[in-house]
Length: 327
Image (tube, rainbow, N blue to C red; front, side, top):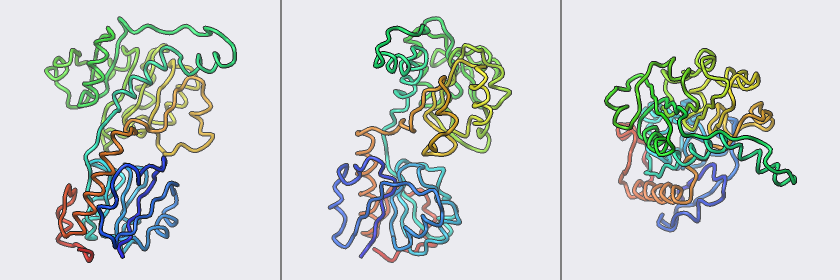
C-alpha cells in the first residue's frame, strides 16, 4: 500500500478537482483540511506516508522536518516554486520534489483590494446592512499615481490596468530598466521617489534574502498620509511591525493585504483590529480554475512517479540519492 497525504485542503475540494482514480489501486489517499503549525505534530501525522501533496506554501518543509520523515519519497507542491520547501535538503535526502502548472489570478485580487480601499467598499457594505447610507467619500483614480514595486509578469499586468483607469505609472525594483518600464507606460524612478510620490503603492516582488523587509519604517515614512499600500506578493517583504505602527498612527490612509508573516493569520491579530485595512486570506491563487490545474497535475505527478517516471521535477539531482522503493 502506498500512502498519499493531501495537505491543507481548506475548502474540502481536493478529491473533486481531479480524478484520483488514475492512481493505482494500491494508493491510499488521505486528505487533511486542517493546518498544523507545530513541526512535531506534522511529523507525527506524516510519518507513515510515502507521498505528500502540499498546497502552495501553507505547510513548511525545512530540513529538520524532512529528516524526520524517513518514509517520504515524493513531495508534490502546487506551482513550480515553493519557498517553504528546503529543496537542497530534499535532494540530499533523496526526496523527489515535483511541481505543477497553475493559473494566477493575483492581478484580479490586487485590483479588488485597490478598489475596496479607495471606494471604502467593506465599510460601505457594513453600513448599508445597518441601515445607513453613503457614509464615506471615495477617492477617484484618474490622475493619481500608481507606484509599482516590481514590474515583472504580475506587476506589468497591474500597470496595464492602471493605465486604463487613467493612473500615472511609476516603478522601481533593483534590476528594473528604463526600457522595461517604458514598455508598460511606466516611468522608472528612484526607490525613495516611488514611495514618496505614490498614491497607491502595489508590491510585486518575489520573496528572497534581498527583498525580505525591503519595505520598512524608512520607506513607509516617505509615503503620503493619503496613500495606500497593497501587498499581494509575500508578507515578509513588508516589515510587519513597521506597517502596523504606520497604520495605527494613521501615517498612511490604509493597506490592502492578502499576505502575512504568519498564515493563516492568527485570531485577534493586530491587523484585524485596524479600521484602515482590507484583509483577504491569501486568495490570489484561490480559484476553481487554478485548483483544477493544481490537483489534476498533482495526480499526474504522483501517477508518473509510481510508474517509475518523473515529470515536472524541481530537483533532478535527487535521483542520485533517491529513496524510490515504490515504482
